[in-house]
Length: 51
Image (tube, rainbow, N blue to C red; front, side, top):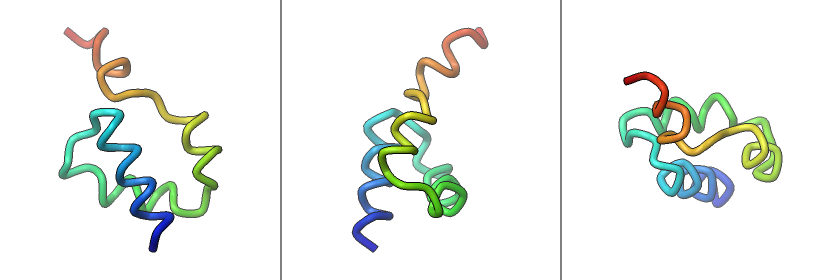
């Protein structure tokens, strides 16, 4: 449970929409926190080119 809370915190810090966080945590649950940090980008970096 603590691991999920850490992943939720990371996603919030990276700016992911609150409604997306539960789904994302389920998808990345099998990965280590270090691996997740290497794989995901801050949400604003991902969406900045879409305007």
